[in-house]
Structure formats: structure tokens, C-alpha cells
Image 1: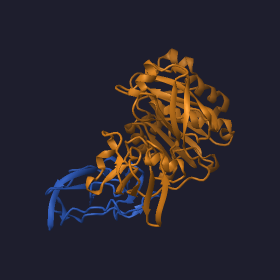
Image 2: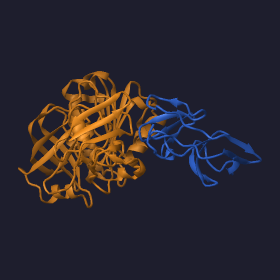
Image 3: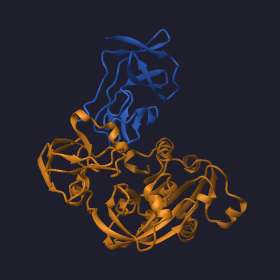
Image 4: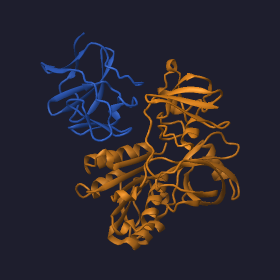
Amino acid sequence: MEIIIETKTGPLAFATLAGETILAAGLRQGVALPYECATGTCGTCRARLIDGAIGEGWARAPGRQGLKAARREFLMCQAAPLTDCRIALSNSMATWRAGSERPATLAARVDRLEPLTHDMLSLVLMLERPMAFEAGQFALLAAPGIDGFRAYSMANGEAPSRRLDFIIKCKPDGGFSDWLFTRARPGDALSLFGPLGSAVLEPSLGHDLLMIVGGSGLGVALSILTRAAGEGYLARHRARLFFGVRTMRDAAALQQISLWRERFGADFEATVALSEAPAAAAERALWPRLCFEEGMVHEAVARRLDGQPRNTMAFLAGPPPMVDAAMRVVMLKGRLPPSRIRFDKFS
Amino acid sequence: MAWKVAFREGAIGQNDMKEFDVDGITVLLTRVGDEYFAYPPLCPHQEEPLRKGLCDGELITCFKHIWQWDLRTGACAGTESRMPLKMYEVRKTAGQVEVFLEQPLVYEYDA
């Protein structure tokens, strides 16, 4: 099908493949359509249907709430065209960051599945061919027989790579995570669309890094730290990681974090904030290089942030309330301007 | 078409942002010192409730995309915002905070 987008500077046309959403088709062909979650939640990819017919996709997508039926608004991340369509964007066109990869649909196989904690697992996928991505980006995953795509951030940092690591949290009623936790086996086929997202590490900007993550948002920090460590970035810049968990049984990847601490010394600080039960003395003794704090992760940041961090980029990733609370702290206490805050809300 | 009583002075705390129903119109109010300011409740960008964001005494910040405005003038601040905040006139009379309401201020979300 052909999609024509009416813009102030004239029409813009691209084609879609059978079953492909308008958003995926545009992004794949380098059209910088506005989006954030790409999975029906945020509403950023709203557009108006001027002419034509679409299949609307996920009927209960939360991002549908703000749509105006009278204007024939729909979500480009959900809509697959049934005929040629003429549309107009509700939000302005994004800009394609120089050097960032166009996303593509790739075949993948489950390479490894390992429990990380009682409710998170590490998923390693092997792609049909290497994919370039920036640290902090995500991909959409679809499993055979399960409707729709789920968004997960890459947790590894080497790129381009055929291997992609993800941290998956088991969600109640989550069809995809349920499949991964109970039925998926190495060798199983998946479909992947990526890379996506703009909350990324840009090494050329040369900032110190302040990472505040919770739950499976840890993957974003692991990706950024892996990339930064690999490029020698941490020899020139400081990095601080605040990892929020409920109890020690939620604290994954401490081994890796501790190794970075050993390697980078005072230039890398890692704090685990425990909101429900403090770390026992024996647990602290096990990880002498890590700091442990009681309370919510944003409270730990507020306590440990010494004045206004200079030349710093903050990365916030995790559940939306955690990200909002962390945003308050970095703006009020850290006085970071919006251009120095990148965030990814996992909902 | 008139000044309407919104609330008693002191009914909101410093730097709070709170929605009030004033004659059927939802108004977002903030307080800085003894001054009060009133706005439509939603972000001009993507209709996010501004009360979920941040008021720091100088700026209002929407947490959806970190758009920021000067809370006294509604003018764009920071690096992200592309549209100013609309504002209602506010005055204090005899311990009451009043808002001038003609009709709800709205944004053209499809502009």
C-alpha cells in the first residue's frame, strides 16, 4: 500500500509491506515519524486519516485514550493500511539523528534463557545478521502465536552485533513474558524490529554519566556501561549508577557492576537502593565495592548527589513513577536542564 | 465572564500545583510565595496533566517531554518547549484567590 503524509512542506510518500504498520514502514525507510514507545502506550505517533482505510490493531492500546474520533485519529504504531492512505501527523516530524541506524525487521532465535532473579530473566537472542544500535536503544519482539510486539531495551553494548541481550521482567498476564518464562526454549524463532529509541549514549558529547534505573531498566545502564567501558570512555569521564530494587533478591548483575567498579575505581560509583529491606551485613560483605542505601532510588540519589553535577547527562529508566521521581531530583537538586536528561519509561 | 472565587488564600502549599474546579472549568493553580498563578490543566504539547509535573518556584515542567515554561508569564523556557502556556488572570481579594474566567482556555492540539 502507499502512504502519503501531508506535511507543511508538501506530501511525503512511502510504501508498506503486507501487514506492516505505518510507523514501522516509515521508520524502516528513513522517514523520521514521531514516536516513543512504538507499542501503543504513549500516543506520540498519533495521526489523522484523511483518506483510505486502516486496520487499527490493538483495540485496548492505552495510547488510544487521547485520540479524537471526530478527526479520525489513529496510532501509526498500531495501524496497518487496508488501502492506499492519505494521512497527516498530529505531532511534528522528528529529526533523524546523524549516524543512527534505520530499524529493520530481523529474524532471531532464542540462544539462551537464564533466570537472573526470582522474577527477571536474561534473554539472549541471535539475529540472522548483525544489527547496529546505540546504547540505550530498544527493539520490538514478537513471538509466534502471541499477538503484538513488546518493547525491550538491549542490555549489551557491543554493536554491530548478532547477539542481543535483554532483561525481561515477568509481568502478570503478560502473554510474551509468560511465554518466555514457561514455554520458550533455545532455538525458538522470534521476529525483531529495531533498533528504536533516542534516549541513547552519544559518546561524542563527552558527558559524565548519571544513571538512575529500577527493575528491568537495569538493562539500559548495562548497555551504556558496556559501551562506555569498551570505548575507553570511562577513562575520561565519571559514571555513577543508582540501581533501585525492593530487596536484595531483586538485585541482578551485581557481579558485573562490581567488576566495573574494580576496573574503573573512583571514576565509577555504584549504589544499590533497597526500598523494602536493607542489605544484610553478609550481603554487604559479599559486595565490598558497592554502596548500599535504604529507601527509594531517587532518595538515594538526593542524599548522594554532591551539589550540582557538572557536564553530566542523566539517564533514567524504569517504571514510570520511579522515572518521574528521579526526574524531580535531578531537576531540583541536580539542576540539570532538560537537554541533559534522557529517559525511558517502561510501562 | 467574571472574576470567580477559586479558593481561600493558603489553600495550596508553596510550589504546589493543584487542579480546581471553578464554575465547571478545570484550572491548574500554583503558588509561589504569596503569588498565585492559573493555567489550563493540560500541557499544550500532548495533553499531559501538568499537575503530574514539577513547579520549582520559577519554572513549570511537564514530565512527558520535559517542556518548561516561566511560571509567571507562561513563556517557553528550557530547550524543549515549542508552545507557551496560556494563563488566566488571578487576583486576591479579602483572603480569597479569584480567577478571571470567560471561557476555558484551550490549545489547538492539531495545529
